[in-house]
Length: 139
Length: 139
DNA sequence: AAAATATTCAACCGAATGGTTGACTGTTGT
DNA sequence: ACAACAGTCAACCATTCGGTTGAATATTTT
Image (cartoon, rainbow over all chains, first blue to last red; front, side, top):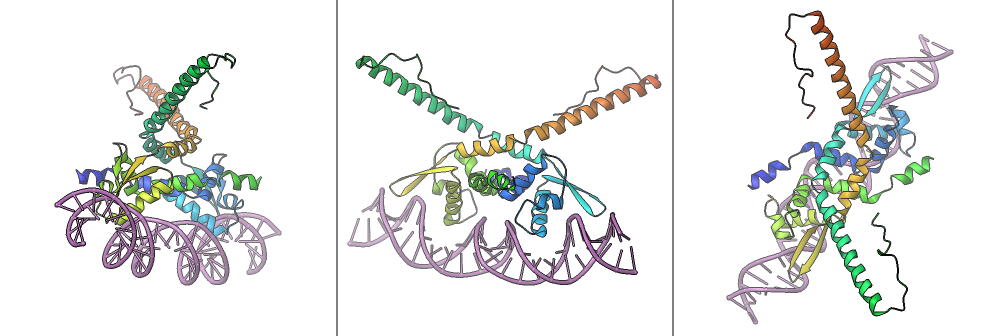
């Protein structure tokens, strides 16, 4: 049982992917790659960082399987490889019901407040009748 | 413009959340918390690790806003706080179109292969007529 | 009052991280 | 042939990480 636990979470992919995503520079690089293929220098220029530094970040992304590279002469072209991001999202999907649950709770609380304020309006008829539901953006 | 870039990815929340998720022990702890509130010792026991070690992991999760704690006497109860996971998923959602795009590409390629093999069947009428679409699990 | 329990704290350790610099390896343009 | 260019490599540095141990702080039980 404990062993199941240990095995269940020995998912080196996720380790690498989440670690890769934990750095803002690397997230920015990924974002940049959504615009299309870019060379290493192109990816490096926006950052206040040596080329070698940026190169390291790209290697981390490559190691996590988030970037593919094909070399053409002396220039290395990088390409977004999103499949592993899908795995990460799949992992997060397991927890979806926990935040939607909380949002549902919130909605229930707000509805309850609405009922309460409706009652107080009945007791204080001086305040004007408002539209059936108080406007409230749950976004 | 470069500045926009720099600002756009200064999202310390995501840094902390993704970093927290990059460790398998911490992911296991989160998973455990989906079953409900657990004390620090309860969370620690499945792991081959000192209590202090597990405690540190929990503090990391807390720091990332993924766990809330309420103290009752000498025992600390931990609770999953999924909202920040939603933020992470939201970030990943931006990239969804890139893996679905690739899946669409794949589908298109397979369709093309089907057409090609259909043509070759026409040229080699010895092979028996099969059902309209070759069965193929895209999963 | 004393012992047991739940947990953190502080100091320490080795390994990994994010970054730099300078030298090296290829490739391309003159 | 040579200089410029694209990029990696290797060594180094400070910091963080994941982990340990032992002592400290509360709280609960006996």
